[in-house]
Each structure stands twice: as C-alpha cells, then as structure tokens.
Image 1 (cartoon, rainbow, N blue to C red):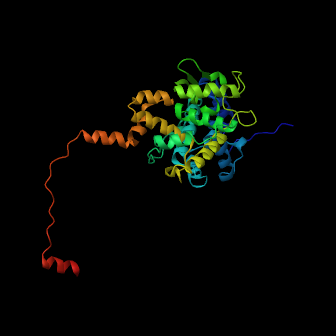
Image 2: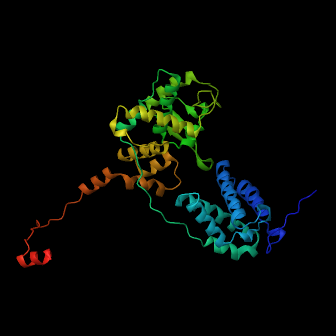
Image 3: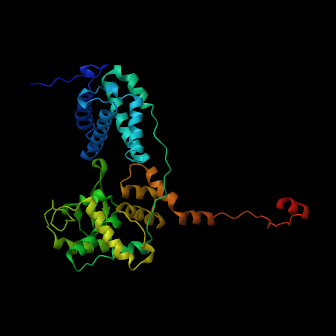
Length: 342
C-alpha cells in the first residue's frame, strides 16, 4: 500500500522539499559540481538538523515540507537554535547558513516562483565574530613533545612517526589519518602525498631526519601501497580521535620534563599552526606557506602574520621613536588638593 505524501497547506507536490533536495544533491552537488564525499556529508548533516528542527518547531513532518516552508523567519529561528540550544560557534552557524543559501539559490534557479522566498533567505547576513590569535608552540616545546614517545616499543615508535609527520607537513588531522604507504616517497629528498579538503591534493617535502625515521618505520608495517601508513594497534587505520589521544599521551609525558607545557591544551591543529608560525619566523614567504598548508586563499594564511609578534618587533625596530620631551609632573596647588579631598 502506497503512503500518500501531503504537502503543507500552501505548497504543491512539485514544491516538495524532498524532491528539491534530491535534485540538489544528486544532480547539482554530485553530478555537476562533483563535490567530495566529506563536503556532501557536511551539506547532508545541515539538512538533517534543519528537518529535525522544523519537525519539532513547526510540527511539519519532513515528507510534508515544501521549499516555501524554509522562509527567512524559520531559517533565522533555526540559526538561533544552533547557537543557543546546540551551542554552535558563530563560525559553525555561518557554515550551516551557507549550505541553506546554496540550496535556496539552486531551488530558485530551477523554479523561478520560489525567487521571492529565496531572496529573503539569501539576504540573511553572516554573523561577524572575533578571530582569536592562533596559538602555537615554541621550538623547544614541540621538540619536547616529539621526543616524548618511547621508541623502543611499536606504539611509541608509531607515535614518534605520527608527531613528526604532523609537525613536518603541517597537515590536517584528517589528512594524516588518511595516509597510505603508497603516499610515501622515500627517494633522495623524500615527500608525502596528502589528500586534502575538496579532493585537493598536494605533495609536501620531508626533512632528512623524517626520511630516515620513515625508512625504519616502513619495516614495521604492511608494505602494500593501500595499507595505512599509521595503523592502530590492531592494524587498522588510526582515527582522528586516536591521533588526538596519542598526542595527549605524548603531551602529558613531555610536560613532566618541560614545565612550560604544563596546563597547556595542544591539539593536532595547534601543531599545524606551529608549523606555519615556525616557517614564517624562518623567513618563508606567505604564498609558500599557503601552498604548504593547502590554503585556497592567502587571506587564511595572513592570520599567522598577524600572530607573529617577533615579526612585528622587527618591523618596529626599523622605525625611530619620535623625540618627545620628558614629562614633568607638577604638584597640585594646596587649594586643588583641598578640593580633591572633599
């Protein structure tokens, strides 16, 4: 027996949200734009949250929703729900809004009758927020963390390789978790092939010390090209949470020897920031750092220049302080002192 799908009061079957989403994902995002599975998953999760919100707030079942039901007031209510109920950051809120905007733009292009609804949603502004200064480690601190694992054990050796790759490449944690043995090239120079966001790929050179370490490590893992370069203890692929956990273990051990690490929270992304800052402080051009990190825009890389206090001090050294007279403090008259005491 077929279940009839009833659109909301002001909609038609052609206006059903389910049909529009199917066109949007299958024909537009996957077939035409050919977005990566990770990006598709981000878009999918946004609409899962939105449909759940609409069911609870507007009392409309997902199968009964029409595109017109996603009007500006409801989208604004959804964004408020993300921020105040789910405690999403403004950055996450803006990402969800960008997904909804993209869908409404596509829906209006397919059906011009939706243009007025789409325009009001597209007019919702992104939320401005303060960008925090990136946190990074000093060369001494990162060296303490790299030397923390006990390399006489298999797990310790693996952790040393893991931390070295994180610092050497400045890779995202997802890129490191996805590394296969075939991504490693150990010729004279040595390099790693990284699979970045949006199917973007890049090759990052390795230090000589990293090459020597990885040559030894290769004898302790499955040598087939599709095998994980950094397996877990069971031989499977190490996960994002697994990498974060092994970093915490190394940090705890390093903090026992380096007091400057005590109380610090260090994430894999903080090591990525550390790589970028150390490259900048070594005189590497911003455009090279952007390519190294896989940034699409130089604007993203400028955050490191803003955070580099040492470079700012060097720039200040080129400026001469203006000559000023030494200030002299005059003692107030007695009557003024009397009035101030009242």
